[in-house]
Amino acid sequence: MTGFKPHAMRAPEYEDAKRVARSGDTGERTALARQSGMAPEILYYLAADKAAPVRIAVASNDATPPQANAMLAADPDAAVRVALARKIAALSPQLDQEEQDRLSRLTWETLARLVNDTAVEVRAAIADVVQAMPDAPRALITRLARDTELPVAGPVLQFSPLLGSEDLLALVADPPAPCTVSAIARRPHLNAQVSDAIAASASSSAITQLLANTSAQIRETTLDALIARSADHTEWHEPLVQRPKLTANAARRLAGIVAEHLVMLLSERPDIDPATAAFLKSQVVKQVSWKGQQTNHPSDDPAPGKALGEAAAIETAGELNEDRLLMSAALGEARLVSAMLARGAEVPLAVVERAAALRSAKGLVALCWKAGFSMRSAVVVQALLGRLPPAAAITSVPGQAWPLSEEEMRWQIAFLGRPQGPGKPTAGAGLATLASG
Image (cartoon, rainbow, N blue to C red; front, top):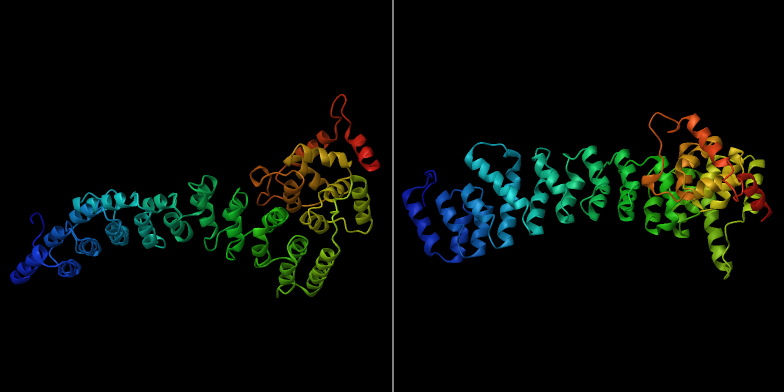
């Protein structure tokens, strides 16, 4: 037992400790290993004890010297390494990767070894300790955040104040594991930029977590796009209904998608105005009535000619506006939305259908602009008519009404209205064919 600084133990105590360390029973050796004032060399000796409870006690003891900690980092018992991981993680704010002091450097290397341990529970023990530390080493936090196991990465992704927006956006764009984006989505007080990135991801489970995160900031346009997509994602329905600060228009659109018990929940929200609440309750009655009268002949989206007629009637009634368009989109009425877009933009229906068939994000945005709608509608139209995934859709640009120039949007509309080549009908001919159908 050499190589350690002398410890302030009286000679009789020291000799008694040596005797217990060598020949005491397991309980005595464990009690000795727990003592905060124990001599470092005694603890180093006990670090090689054959009994795991003794080694766990040594691993947990703050007085254990760095040399013994380094030895315990390779202990075959994961419980020993977990105890050591929790202790070293708590010391991490005091550690510096560039530290020149030999013992401090040794402690950092021990931490680095533990953070790469093959046992998930060891790495998770570190994450549990440092998850909310404002002064933990940044290198440690970023390493844990990129772990592929949720018990390790999850606490840090959800709570670490050291992960900024740029870190989170990079992790959403290139997630190390499927659980990464879902863990970020649960993070308190997410800003709108990160929420947009999660909403644009392909992870339905992450979007479910985002919607359930009532402290997350979600732009109204983003929420509209998610509502438009929610017909295919029943798992989003309840968290959508329970989103805070839900607008009346969003509630009306949800009423055409979610089950009647959720529509009833919508109608009972304290932030819903009486007129909207009455509308929602009428929707519940309609849903129940429809279920009672349902036959084996499902109602299809109206044929093109009928859709054009409905759009004309809506325009005549003075209701060809953004709210009406968004409500039809939320109900999945693709043909009617196309017809309303054609009427509003004063173009043949075939122009809209060509933009949808080409999955032209720019074309659909241009048509919404020409129709007098906003980018809020354009985001929804791209998802519904163009079937564009969020990553391929054009979204709004802060400070600008439209992300494209007027010249570009006029060109897009002109392009969509041009004849499509020999043997192919023009956009105008397409309208005549559709209307006659």
